Length: 412
Image: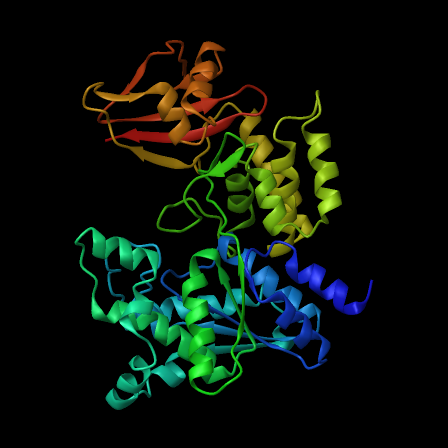
């Protein structure tokens, strides 16, 4: 295998779209370091593991000798990316964006090699665009091409508002590529349209169009395996289903132990430093008869905590986690969930409550936990598989024996 073959194999691992592979191979063969771009809008203060999927790929490019340009979208965050939205994104203040931008830049270097990384803020060039510049930029793109975007098309067909500034967002992101002279831009699969606008816009400016690579979106902690497929919303702070890069070691460990048994292997595939063969071997061992419960989650949690803290912190976090689950006391930092009551039931059925609180993979599994006398609510065994957690109350819920799981559930 040649050096180019090895480089392509590394780049292609975990990638979904590459536009295009022949061009990428040719540019790698040139021997010139590529300028590899990715943008992150600081809509929230912290990066999480969903962002790390993309940053891992950036790091791989660095290891191959290429230069990463990490764009902090302090300008575009104030415009609001309409990707995947059925209504306009609420605008953020400049103060909110700047607070998030500071932490993004700091946390990015937990993954990236700072010596091969350039951190840029897109307000550097977008703030300087005059009204005439904006008109000229908008003239590079037609309404028809913009309406090819699915979320715009769906909103139009459903008579939902589309605001003019939302049409500008893909152009602003694309102009970032022009400004920094990107060779290739990386993003999540939901960003493919925006990335391709960048490729088109560079051509319109008589520049060599950037290549495009997308990576999968990481599902959140509430994802489940349904008919062999991982289903659930993507990891995000707004959905409260995330693991933050800068979170304390114990919080990272505790949260990752909540990941569904079937879903944890997707986390391994997208985030682990282990090889494909090593992950397959580990999975076979963890799924063998007699294997320790949730051993896959433990191994993954150790790896993540070690990566973002230290090996010592991982040992301490695991010991604290185990101590809390063997002790009789309900942990003060147990995850909290607020669930909406079903008016017809006057609360939430116990099986459904366990599923929503991530104490069971499904409501039917939650029911089996109750039938197996493995559920304690407010210190008493819960034995009615058709029982309901009543509205207007809070509950301390424990599931399991030796390996207990805890949640504080409030029914509203």
